[in-house]
Length: 49
Image (cartoon, rainbow, N blue to C red):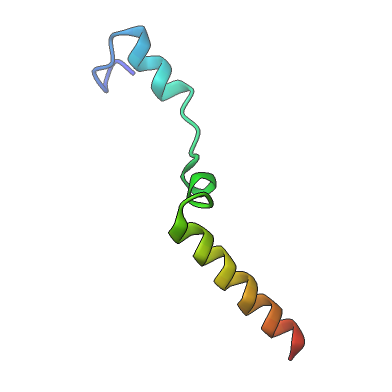
């Protein structure tokens, strides 16, 4: 952390406790929901074949 120049504990905490949530959050955007619906439709059509 010292090499990154993070000296304050609040900055270090942000790096240490970071969780990649972007995939989960994308489900709740209009584009994310539409993409999920499209993937589900493709999956369903593949199962029917």
